[in-house]
Length: 497
Image (cartoon, rainbow, N blue to C red):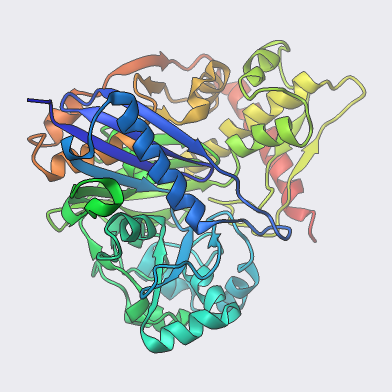
């Protein structure tokens, strides 16, 4: 008999990935399909919704083919996804009404400012744990209703479906039979009440979102749907769903309150497990559902950096300073420091803890002696320094020090970045053997959901460290680096004045 296998689907901002994982949490096969986002206006980010689905389906098929496995051999599917990105479609036809509006998109920043001016943000924050920011889903949905006439017509007919990417993929995987989302994704919409665990009628009214358009909220772990055999070749239980950063927290086995992870992808996302305590931040962080199992919610504090890996892509694609992203490490190490150069990558504003939609990116401290190596090193340092602001806020909110930061994501292969991160945080950094923590988290949630693993203790025992980075920088130098960074951030925030 074949060993039980879980298929993890990981739909990200720039690619769709599929992993096959066995009952020992080992990766058997993986396949990746890249796609492009579109930028029709400054600050706007969107992607073809059908392209999201097709690349995920192709990745699924590619992983199965690589392992020479049939769909009927899969015990369960776990799904994780880029969060806050919104798709609107017709329930009757399944056709999307337009492109997906991506989490990075700032087109609704003005609408958020208008809502803040009404004085409702404190109440919104209390109910959702979030801020009134274009980052989240609700104002994207409102924009679609205001700008796509078909959306209003379908809403009146009860045919409009709104969903984050998990909902869109589940709709397609199930042949249109299931419109659902899990609690972790729902908690990123500005429409979910952290205390009740349901869509909030007051919030729906404030944003003008019809309740009939929204998916049903389900557990993050447990069988919630079956795939359509005509779509994927077999009826497979969908048994795990989580937003990408919550899935990474689970994949890093950060199950105990006080454990934290940081994912380095297009952006950076630092999450701290707060257990069953729903901690509201007073320092610019977000409160979110980490996962929900057997109707029991685990919460987390989160800090989001909008631009991380995207900064290195910009150096490569727009400035031509490097040929490959991997070149950044050698260039950074070729100089002893950044030569006084600082970069603030506020291309789409600043996220936590600043939440300044008007801030814009800058490079400062340039001299005639500045080289591309200094600029590349300053870029990598900027990624790490943004996370320092998050951790400082997190420790103030939680009231305790963090003993270790577990890291993952594409940029975690960069040893210079990992070491500099430990140095400026003043906290050791650990990188796991399996760096695809997001997809692994989806697989683990699905395996837990069908009883493949007995519980969190068994899953935690499977986590293995690849490398540990101890703090080497002394406190005086750390403070000097932070001071220079904060001076640069202040300049970025005053550019638009």
